[in-house]
Image (cartoon, rainbow, N blue to C red):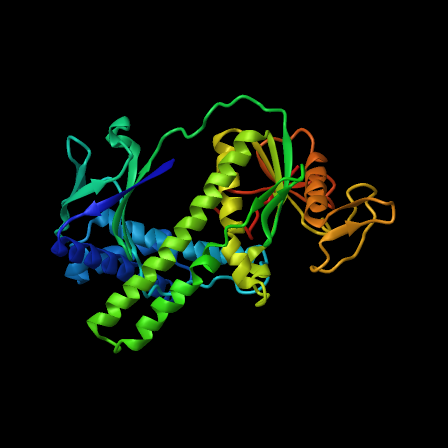
Length: 397
C-alpha cells in the first residue's frame, strides 16, 4: 500500500461542504463510542447496525456516503480494540480509553461516490454533501494505477488548505544490491545520531530555529479580540508556522532514514520509549524537536521497502558499558567521553553506537524488522509496521 497526496483546489462553497462532511464523520464516530459506552459488550457488527439507525434518524448523516459512515465506525472500533489490547498487554500507565473527538480533520471514502476524470487531474464526489469537482495539484501521476487499485480516498483539512489522499494497493518493494555494511545508530540531542563508524548527523533543531517567529505569531493571537475574524486569521497564521516546522522535521527524518537504509544491509537502533522520555520536562522540548519517533518510523518503512534488516535493541546500559571490555562505567548525561579502566577512551555516543551494533549482530539468522533484547536468550519480538512503537507484538522463537 502507498499513499499519494494532492492539494485540492475548489470554491469556498465546496470547502464548506467538505467541512460538513468531516463534522458528520466526527458525529458518527462519537455516537459509536457513546453507544459502546452505554452498551458494554457490543462488537463491530453492532456498531455497524447502530450506524444504520443513525442514518435513518438524522438526514445529514444519510447525506454522507454510506461507506464514509462505515469508515467512521471503523475508526471508533479501532480505538476500542486498541484500548482492550493495551489492557491485555498490561501497558503501564494510561491504557488509552476511547475519547470523543472534538476537532476531526478528515473524512474517508471507500470505493463509491467518487470518480476521477479521464486525465486523473480532477476528482468528483457525488454524494449528497454536494462537494462536487475538485482540482488535484501535485506531482504524482495517477495514470500509472488502475481504478480498482485505489482502495480509499480521504479528504484532509489543514491550516494551509484541503488535501486529497489516495490509498493505492500496489507492491512497494525495491530490489537493491547488498552493500555488505552494517551500522549501529545512537540518537541524541546534540547530534541527531552518531553511528558505529564515528560519523555524526547534525541536529537541525527546526523548532528552536522557528521559536522566535512562533512567539511573535502567538503574541498576535493574544492581542486580537476573542471570537473576532482577525483572531481566527492570526490563529491560522500561527498554525501555518507549526505546520511548516512539523513538515521540515518529517522530511529530514525521511531523507536521513532513506540514505541510511540504502547504504547498509543491517541497521541497528535503540528501542526507545519516547512516551516515557518526554516525561522529563527539562528535555521534553528537545526530544520532540529531534524527531526520534519519525526517524525510527521511516527506518522501519524503508527497511521493508528495500529489503534491509532493521533491529531495535534494548537501550539499557548502551551508554554505560565499554564496547571494548564490556565493563560498566557509570556516567551522568554531562559526561560526554567514555573512559574505561582498560584504557579505552572514546566519545560517549560513538561507544553507545558500537554497543548497539554488537547487540544486534548477536541475533544471527533472522531477517526483517526485529526487537532485540540481550536478556531474552534469542527470544525476539517482531515490530508491526504502523503500530504504536511502545506496543510490541507477541514474541516469536
